[in-house]
Image (cartoon, rainbow, N blue to C red; front, side, top):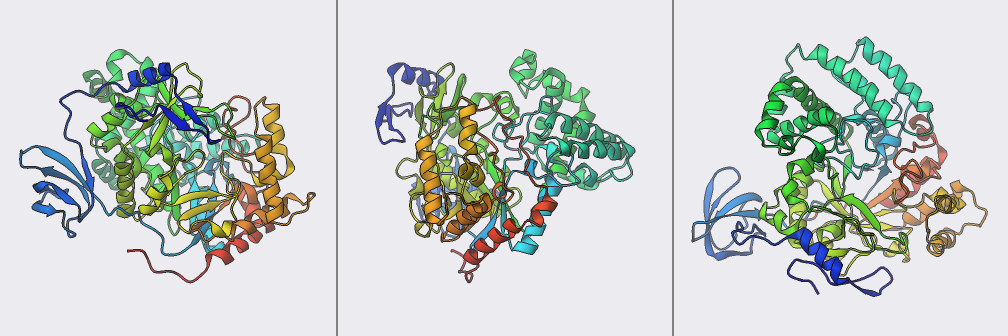
Length: 616
């Protein structure tokens, strides 16, 4: 049962057992949610053409400033978008009118799942960058017919040392991380001695077995500062035009970057007057640091340009994390919308037997509604800037989120409900506008109705060979199919047992039985002998995946590189270099690796049927 705060007092766990929430947990979560005031603004209306007009009549102010009257039902020729609706009582209400269906590709596609930072090349500065991504995208599109690349989140972190390693703990989901810049490709870099020296030092970092983000950032920041000192003498009309059209949030973000340099990355420890973005103290600070703020605006412009260039000719699918760093920019800009002293996570399940606490503060549902969903809209839109696609991490969070009160274990949380119908329709609208496909990561404990609601809107499901017991040929067409993810064993790690051994060495509580079942299913389905090689196991896994009718067939770059270590073991932070493990082969080696071409041929055959008509 769901109470007045939107909290479920019980839930069905991964094993099918009904679990009741302790009264003290319910009370703690209610306290974090708070009680809405009586004078709340009108709730936004999220609807579609053909649906009834409230009160039978309304006066609309459309996005473009034009006006229109509607009666009875919203007409089919009304433009999709974000409008204002004024009812008979004269009170304005936000109207979000959309198609109710996300954009879908007109054909099946195959592509890569890649951790950008892990893709080193001979020119990299110790980690993969956006030029390496551009190279992978161009080469695989031209030589292998790949249609997309799914990448880890590349959103902003604090510009301070130490650099945040996890892509799923961003300071902002609306801005990009300039750590991924290919500095030599920045306008004005050619011939700058300091850039050439930094490049030499950066390439030397490729010999390190793990990524040193701190040293990479020191080198890149110093080189970029030198380029800026030179180029800022000459006007750049493109940059100036971009800053004028980017809105106040860009200046606010750049100001936060400079404040972080001055006072540290956690805004809650700053002097009190600087903890409020719109304060006079922040305005005064910004006036005194105008050049440095413009520098950080320039870094965003450069990063966005390189990301768009990397996506030319291929669908770049960006990953949208479930939340943000509580000390980061989005939390500084929207503190009143995020719950205090609580974080989101997951209850115990078969692969995380202690549950998970991700350390990310959730939106308070009623406050998000009162903000007319604007923060959510901006977040989704920012992840579709390249027009390729969006993968919503933990899409179940649009329906309900597992709230863990501060100080409690992940097992002592509760599910809080969100306005899923509205949020899904906003994802569909933004997808339609950007002509970008949408994927929902629906793994783990998925309650009834989630996948059906996604399918109704053309939001693709996410199906994994490791999790699905059914034959891949029976998987849904409206899905992204993959073997594994960044949080699960690679084929090599599963097949050799090295992943299980590492978990034991870390003192974790691995699911031995479930892991053995995954390996047995692979061996049986791909007809693998127990002593088959890693290459045979990888080819066998993707041979199975190639049988699926799903629209998107995804090959993990880690698998064709023969990586035994997965990018991340949840809960092992500090015990291993999560998010800092490079691929065991650089891009040049990968391009000539026979296993890569064998797997590409397998999925090419599956993904090349005649094109089907584009959905209406």
